[in-house]
Image 1 (cartoon, rainbow, N blue to C red):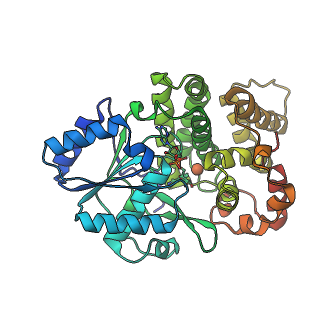
Image 2 (cartoon, rainbow, N blue to C red; image 1 turned 90 degrees about the vertical axis):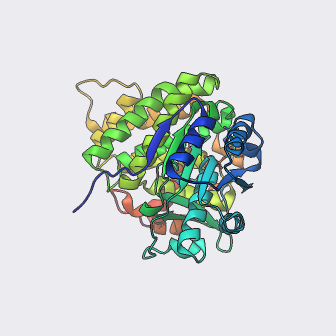
Length: 385
Ligand SMILES: NC(=O)c1ccc[n+]([C@@H]2O[C@H](COP(=O)([O-])OP(=O)(O)OC[C@H]3O[C@@H](n4cnc5c(N)ncnc54)[C@H](O)[C@@H]3O)[C@@H](O)[C@H]2O)c1
Ligand SMILES: [Fe+2]
């Protein structure tokens, strides 16, 4: 049977992180959580207040705060050591995709043993991994709801995505106060990551009517509230809507996946250190144009969500091509993503990656075949304004 939508994560939304975390731990009987964060998040008052609340209730926590962006596999393994040393029984991951992905990796290895990269093989068996409580502080990856984790294999310079239905979070705690401090540049990048999840999931081979409905809502929320969150980071209503959009997109990813846009981001991101959300946003117009001949209606609908209205006499392909321009306008003019040229990466450098993009694991979800020639075309379009 082909199940189209499954949701195992208990989602809680709250204005009071401390009480909610205590409540979850007491409900589930966890006594010894390990906080998994980066150095910055470990220092913020809301996190420290939550730690005080747990300590006052005799919860013995430890902290692993060595997460870095685009984490290498070794960070996961260092976290496993911290988990064992503390004899932890659960993990509280606080941060963006990097922290939550590392936490998921720690949870997989502490239950299943071995090295996290062992689980990048498609036939790896991953047993049920309970006890992960995810508190997102960016609104982008949806890692709090998704079954994915992305780690870099530093030997090959490759970003590896591991998909594990048995390692989703036990809880996702959505607290808008956690994202109020997210800088504007990261708000743009992470919001565009969520938009790409929805747009790529909408145009993925694995999409279905139920995942499509989620994608449409995610894009609607982002089209309407991400500009407000970018303009004023303290706009709590906008932050909350964008946070929900990112989480729903993470859920959808488990079922519909992403496509070649994320392949480009994984290949180029690990090699040239392009911020993940920016990389997928530079990739998306090329991807939408490429899938338009087979999915003109869906691409045109993305344009409608972004505010376009169509004339009756416009063909579907004309509508789709205006939709791609509407996305560029949203990305560059309304949100203000900085140009790809800022990275100083030449077209020749980009084109060296055509084979890697064509062979990346998500490329096969694209509804037209991606060979090296197609990947070359997509790389030529990457970052074009
Ligand atoms: N698991 C998935 O499904 C999935 C999906 C897409 C991407 N990813 C991966 O997730 C990673 C990217 O995650 P990300 O985009 O959330 O960024 P991130 O976790 O790497 O964080 C980026 C930076 O933002 C800072 N930051 C985070 N929250 C903040 C806040 N509230 N205030 C101020 N600063 C804050 C962090 O300290 C860090 O310096 C990449 O490795 C990417 O490949 C995972
Ligand atoms: Fe992503």
